[in-house]
Amino acid sequence: MNDLLSAVVTMTLQVASISDPGGRQVNEDACKFSAQGPLACFAVSDGVGGEVGGELAARTVVETILAEFDAGPAVSEHALARYLDSTKKEVAHQQSTDPILKNMSATIAVALVDSVHARIHWGHLGDTRIYHFRDGRVHRMTKDHSAVQQLVDAGLCAPERIRSHPLRSSLLGAIGITDEEDADIACDVAYSSDHLENGDALLLCTDGFWEWITESEMETTLREASSVTNWLGAMDHIAQHNSSSSRHPRDNYTAIAIRVADQEPLLQQA
Image (tube, rainbow, N blue to C red):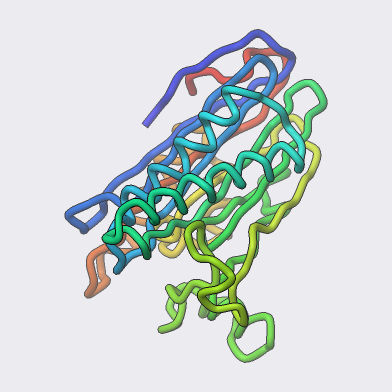
């Protein structure tokens, strides 16, 4: 569950990650992260189910983003858009070179962190989420590009039903889906930025993770956790318990958990 990268700077990001096929035969999720000096990049992706190439699409998305970041590390909305544009082009190239892969696509949640200026820039498309916690509570979070999220926004569905609604898995956007395919509903990457404070926490996760644990449970486990590894493990335990009574196998699930502190290496083992 732990990964180790380090660079001497003024802020610590303690990191833990997990990716599991759940009850499926194949894991179509992918995640990856990297540090370049005081800058870091985190990416999580979920291959869209029901289409050939979902696993390849998710892997291509995270590997392309991290390769672009490593080749030209920067933390800004412009840099993030540049990394994601390269990702879109790479997925489109693979779609065009193999007819079997023409419909492959994947969600994306990517966060860039500048430890010197304590800034985070993120982008997301689909229903893979990014949560930003402060003082043990959700400070900010992404909003899904999905049919059920639109129903919630229109006041036609209660927010607490988003995890169980029959249309919850109906996506309105993903890397690999073009505007021409459905110009009326196609979405583009949503961008946001924020500052970071000591004690903040971040969570990037696919729907197979967040649909089985509430935001309240995320907050409680964060406040009780002695380390970021402990926090991620506690959340996974709750998700496993909550999904155990489901009549359907749990989907692939992937998460990167991050906790911010001062005066240590940028990325260190939790």
